[in-house]
Image 1 (tube, rainbow, N blue to C red):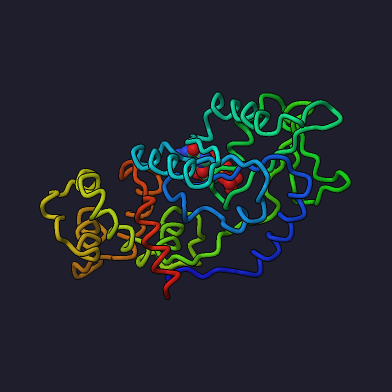
Image 2: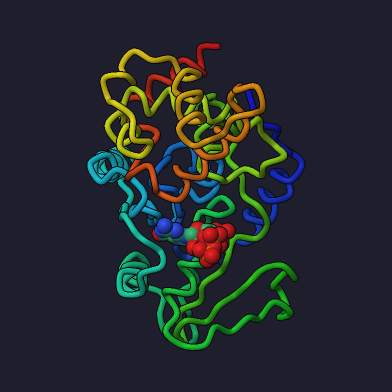
Length: 290
Ligand code: G4P
């Protein structure tokens, strides 16, 4: 595996989230629409059991729309949880979430019983962006209130509607190898914690199968040339195309990997999703069998 994790942080986050959840009425879990399963936190699902939840597939503008539909249908069917695609920067759909949360906990309203909503998700998935889009007036940070830990944010959106940001860093436990690579490809993992060349090769392996036309268009390559090509050959070709060449004509694979990863993260390669429900089921089964 190309990624190094820090389980110590996870234990601290688990404790903080468990403590916070005691007072929470509705949980909004943000997933990355390009990697919904890898960016989910099964631990959170267990901890929030019994509480109404909304799953948001965020960054849908970067994801493959057809696969996002597959995932939304999958979540609704398998988890009986309301699931929505979103672009967290857009205000109108974000603000409609307030009504959606209210509908999930109709017994909570008024100053005596404010509705308390927790926004969860891995770093960089778009939590702050969503919180900002949901708020139509000045955000109140009340980090030093009694009962509210220092690094935690409570945001009062309406008099009887409070939003809480995830306390600490909430990381999924990586059990499925492909999930680790997908998280790394998405940019959720710091550069120091992964081997970029290895991650770019895994990304290319997937793109060569599912998004060959996008790859060909992005790098002005012939789609037929890409057919049957190995990931490292594609990386070399892209490096050559983009001038990532060392003295003596050798390809600078590290530079080529950075190009491939940056283009994917910025949506320049196209609208791409790195996992589908049926694929994920196979990967998960294999991981459990090991
Ligand atoms: P976090 O609080 O969960 O850590 O995530 P945050 O909101 O800071 O978002 C992380 C990055 O993802 C930001 O980009 C943000 O703009 C981007 N982002 C959030 N939601 C969406 C979305 O729905 N679609 C797209 N395309 N991007 C989204 P950044 O480059 O780190 O910062 P910025 O300069 O763009 O603000």
